[in-house]
Image 1: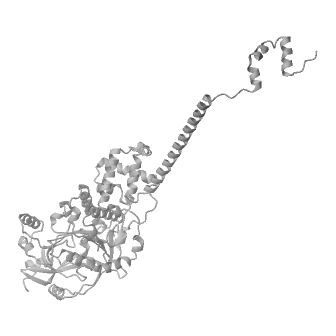
Image 2: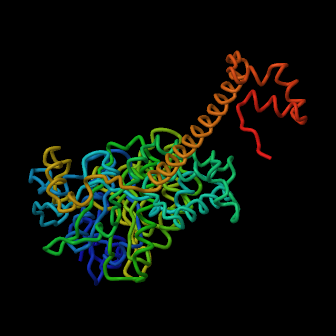
Image 3: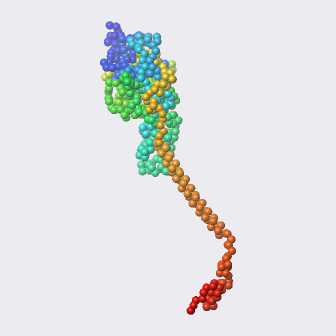
Length: 530
């Protein structure tokens, strides 16, 4: 018995820690004493993939290939996979790889029976930014709590946003996209809408201003494209293909590399939505879905405290829903300590120590591993491409021994597919017709705009009526004034007679007999008979 296969030898003890009885994924062969030992295989139990993990290493050490290797085997075991493809180089998982001397040589070194294979894939894009089936969420579906975290609102502002959502819901004002939310906020501080929330606390103009400014900044990050309809059903990520393999959902993100807030917003929504919808299942034989977030440092650079708290809580709790999350990044320090503490599986590729900061990071990384017979500080700087230090959780949940490993070669294409093939795959998907075209139906913005337009028209009509009435009154006054200043017309003959002095003298004597007689003579009235 050689030292490498002796259970009592260091190599034997390491290998014994990976001799699992249940289904497991094959990572590669043990590296010991400067040689690759194909008879000592390093594996990870399928049931432990929901305990989360980290794939780390310097640029060019093979992290993406490790991601691809694990994702392929998960799919082959009927587990759906989600890949966040920041650089656009993992779309090749959908196409068979190409055999060459390097691939066949690696397969022989690690006792791998390599056979080219592509895996069932769907390609997505955030809000249709880039090539992929658009993934959108409605503002209502996103909810006030997550929205407050994304907008970095304080507690008072978060409570006010909750009131806004409550009001919109009670009034049938659907919040589909960001312009709907903006319209409701603006309405509730307008003269017409101020009284709407008065009985339950109201909305101050200061708080409304903060929310509106935060929404504007959020839109500048590209969030406007993410919010809308049709809303994506996250259960689409849990599908298997007709042959029983797990569907690999590839989120194409090259077009949003410069919009980290949009990416983190999507991640918060996706994990929260899955957590809310999936039942508690505890430990299972295989996970329902495993996430891989490549270039994970983009998630956490400049992230708000609220986002970090949300991610930490979700990573801690979503395990019981049979969901696994793997972060792929350059160094463990890229991942917040509270998140890192929740990760049970680890594949650490080579680290570089060119600067004092690099050396310090290397020492810190070594301290995070269990005790090992390896000189990890020396080992981590000497690993080649496609080699890594591995430690995972065994079937009983205990950490396995640290194992330097030469990793297997992926069976699919190691590189992106051609743009034309990618576009064809997107448009031929049965999901494309369901989600491709954005729908902008009547919602809060349109309803409030219509009400405001009607109110403005009514106000304009009332103002016009008031103006017309005022004008009519002024015209009547002018006519009266003109009438008073006009010359009197010539009097008629009768009027002249009545108005003459002789007639007035005669009228005074009408009471006398003489007057009556004279009056009858002048007006021709008949004499009264006695």
